[in-house]
Image (cartoon, rainbow, N blue to C red; front, side, top):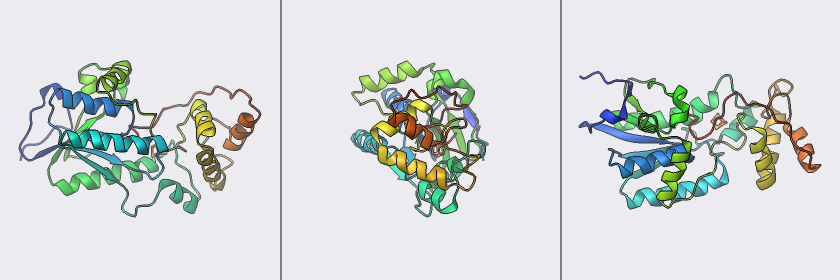
Length: 257
Ligand code: SF4
């Protein structure tokens, strides 16, 4: 059997018999632009797969319906997968008294990567996995971890940056998706927390519960750098400007990488 590369330049792609071509979809700008780009340029594409953590933003769930219709019209299968027990990440956090950790990305592994790979294995084919990483994020390119998967990064190979991604989506007459990812992601920066506080107070409240229920609350928090969500809540209610703090690594739509 031919040994497949674990990463390949998408400019050299030709459909292989018995292989499947799949977008690992995150629900955000880059992976949406990736789908538009692939269809526009007639790349082989069999499936678009999204792993639902059970705690995506409400706008993302609405957007998934938009994409489902868009893909259906073009004859592409859209699969939404979940972890085997169909448990939401927030429920697991509360029952285990833990929060997602930036150091050990167990949430990404259990709620994004594992469900997607379970789906891939069922196809019993080599998988060409398109990843929605744009030209400004070259450092995030990685070979696939599994030998039955080859990673492809068309947005990088064709030098498509974030602004061009937005243009691709607009030209396809699709709405621009919101930043995707779990609402209580520890990679949220202050602006994102402010936005959730403002637009989704119920989700902010639940995030506070997850953070405070965590058995390592004193040292591990969802809010950035030493702040707690309760402090952010108080600042927001008093209409105080939130401090600017750097967040090490933005996460969201492509959190499975
Ligand atoms: S979006 Fe954040 S919380 Fe959700 S799975 Fe990814 S890293 Fe974890």
